[in-house]
Each structure stands twice: as C-alpha cells, then as structure tokens.
Image (cartoon, rainbow, N blue to C red; front, side, top):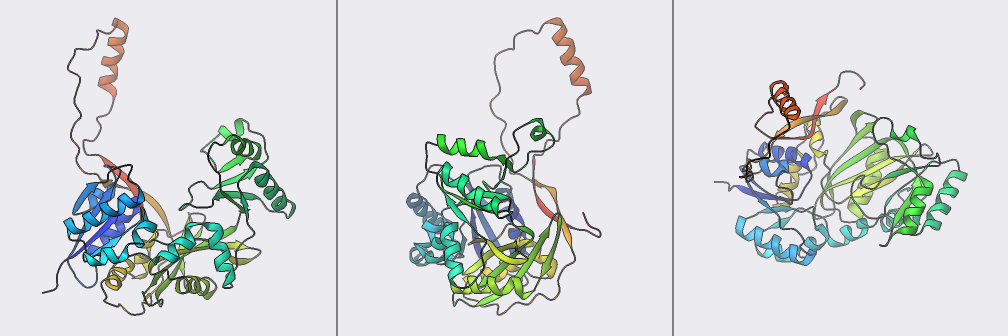
Length: 390
C-alpha cells in the first residue's frame, strides 16, 4: 500500500490554496495531507490545510530553522516547501533530511545569488542572458543621477528594492508636481522624484534600490521544474499583457529560462520573468520559489506542484510536455472560507445613555442596515477563461 504524503507550506501566499488543491487532485491518485503555518490566523491557506499552526512572531532565521525542524518531526512532514526564511532553511538541508523531510527548494548557492537583484543581474549577464540597463542607488544623489541618465536616453525610470519578492516596493518616477490629479481615482505606482530623493536624505536606515527603465509588455513568467541533477523537466511561459493572460512555449522565452534554471541549480520549482527592452526579451526577475500563479498551468493540462513533490520524493516524473496550451484568460477574485474564530470578550458594563437625537438615529440605522453574513471569507485570485479581451 502506498503511504500518504505529508506536505508543509510555511507562511506562503494566499494564492497557494490552489497549489494545495492541485496536490490533493494529483494524477497519481496519491493521498496527500497538507500542513500549513502562517503568522496571520486569518490566512486562507490555514483554512485550506488539513492541519495548521499560527507561527510565532519575532524568530531570528536561526531560531526559525529550529522551529521548522520541530514542526517536521512533530507533524511527520515528508516534503517541506519553504518560503519564509528560505535561505536559512536550505543551508540546513542535511538536518531536515536526517529527520525524514525533503526540502522542495533550490541549493543555498542559488538562493544566495537571486536574493540580491544586482548580483543576480551580474550573474545571468555573465552566462549570456540579456538584462536591462540598471543602476544601484543607496543615496539621493545616486538616485537622481540614475534617473537623469535613463531619461536622457528616452526612458521612463522606475525603481524597486535590490532585494525583495514580487512587486513589493516597485515605483515609477515622475517629475510632475504633486497635485489633486494624483488624488483622483485609485492609487498609482507613480511617485515624484523630489519626494523620493528627500525621503532618501531623511532615511535613518540603509537604502538599497535598483533603478532601471520601465520595461515594455508583454511580461512572460516562465515556470520551471528542475531536478536535483540540474536538468529541466518542465518549462512553460505564462504571458501577461494588460489584463489578458495566456501561455507560450516560444524558445525566445524558454531558452534563457532553461539556461538560468539549469546553470544556477534552481532545483524544483522556480519562476523566471522577462519583459521587453528595445524589442528584445530581457530578464526582469528570478523567484527561487513556486510562483503564486503556478496553478494556472492547469489550463494546459499540467499539475506542476505534484510533479515537484514527486521529484522531491525521488520519483522522477520525466520530461513533462503540456498536452495543449490553454486559451487566453483573465484573473478575477473569489471568496475562500477562513478558519472559525471565537468571539472576543464583550464589554460587561452598560454603555452611557445616548442623547435623544442620537438614539433615534441609531434606531433608524438598525432597521435599514443589511445583515452581514456570519461566515467570514477571504479573497484570493482565481481563474476564469475570457472569450474576449478584458
């Protein structure tokens, strides 16, 4: 009888509820139990898991490794998919293996290269993968000089933290003075150069920014599955152009992604992003973890999470070719249930009496307000196929 597989995801993105769904609906029909931990008790991944714990706050990376080893022993974890403190965890791979847990994560060397975007750009450029022009800015003067050089070449400048995940901290520089126009509609990524420069001058902590031209769409995220033998098993590009999403197997995107994944030991699941510069694809970012949108490959008939777990367990799924490419689609929001929570203690004392006018207003409000649903829900990204451009 084939044993049940226990998989743990730590402090991961809400979208990975779909990662968990795919593990349970695996084509091997293997029983999977999922353990999840998070610092937010209302994270939907906790509700989606079979077992869940709220993580302690304030642990150093070293202390978190001890916490993670204890979780693996107590929960009987077979495969651990680390996101938080990934760098510290992969440095202790042998200790996890000693307690029977395989890490679904790259080598320590690969994680170290791609933690810093400047080091990453220098490294991939050395193996022939094109990158956009970039400047490192740690002071206001360095930022202004970089912006002026980019603008002199006809580019719109943008910046993001030299280390960080996703689009956190990404901003586009504008020289338009702040006005009511910037308070109209939804918040935008545009920020005034003088405000950023002044913020850097006033900063009490070190600043490390990557300044570069704003790159053109399409954005293509190549999801890669690489074995511990450094050989690619799967590479599929997910395209994004505005709200329209799709898939591609074009070598202009896949070839440089393979070169990076295989060359740097990006074992198991990684995500390598490209955009356009001067009419050619250039590297945007490298994620040494499963992408939040990885589950979208299900539209191509591919279950990448399960194939990765198989690799981690030593069961090679072989080279995976999508049987088809799904049609274009868009991403919308949908509700997900949360774990039940107890009602907090209520006030025991009587409230002070309201004035007559206020009492009447409260009474009227109570008769007109809609009743809220008792079951709390959270919003997470889901997919809906689009028959026409969004």
